[in-house]
Amino acid sequence: MPKSSQPATAEHARLAEATGRAEDDLFSANPWYEWGPYLSERAWGTVREDYSAGGNAWDSFPHDHARSRAYRWNEDGMAGISDIRHELCLALALWNGKDPILKERMFGLTGPQGNHGEDVKEYWWYLEGLPSHALLHWRYHYPQVAFPYDELVHHGRGLNDPELELLDTGAFDDDRYWSVDVTYAKASPTEILARIVVENHAAEEATLDVFTQVWRQADRYEPGKGSPLGWLLTMARTRAIDLVRSRGRHADREAMLNEALAIPDQGRSPEDSSGDSEDAVRVHRALAAIPADQRNALVAAYFGGLSHTEVASALGQPLGTVKTRIRSGLIQLRRLLAENGDSVS
Image 1 (cartoon, rainbow, N blue to C red):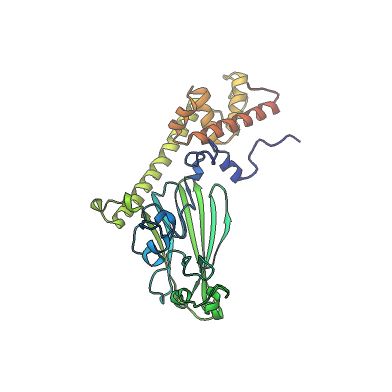
Image 2 (image 1 turned 45 degrees about the horizontal axis):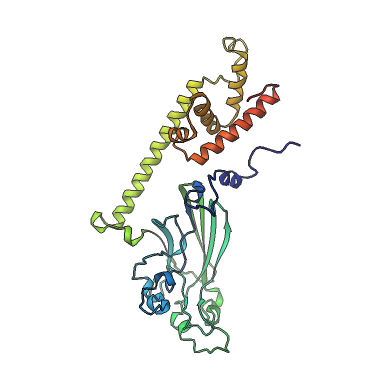
């Protein structure tokens, strides 16, 4: 059997939009890489955030500072995503009504605090993920009792003793905890849907406050231009207007291109098509049988005489996407014409 020219899965199709190798330049390798899980779940205590004279990262930026100090080089958050440049970040925050602080990032012991060195004292999992980041699924277990920060730090154990784990503190006794599942799905490279599902595993009712946080890096925020809430509402309104306008422009462009090509209805009788050349009718009908996005790219390139870059600009699509659709459209067009005994060069 001949090998199919179509991508095996939707993910194969997304990866086929690449215009370069990710290891060479992730920033422009594929439009689907623009948003992803680029947000660290713990940036405190790292070398990049060490501003001390003696190079002691642990003491320079401990966990206690993270909720009240701005990072210079990093951002962090739970179930966090961001654009590839960290200009806009989104993450989860939780509060069980007992803790003195919001649960915004992973807690752990520094090298000197742990009896076996650095050790994160949390439980979370990455359950699903695609290379294009079109699907991401993350899970976290959060105790309903006050998180035992002090007990974990002042564990009193030595080098030859086992580590004090979060389970050892009784924080999860009687299944008094919530599982929090966060799923991200992309409708397009820049349209992201999020679903947060919380399950109470205890026998008793319990209340959990769930927050989503959106912020810009500290060095990019200008307070003189407005409050964070005002900025967020303005940005959401602007993006919504852009989306509505782009859909209108897309519909106008498709109607204009179809009208220019005058693709006949496949249901037309031979009498209705008598004024068209036989070759033109066959090509038009083959074009009408391929997906509209591939057809529009082909029409603009081969009937409109536009370069690939000009097609991308005219259709408002990434250059890699246009190249893929032109290539896929030509393959489909050749197949359809070959089935009818025709050929296309």
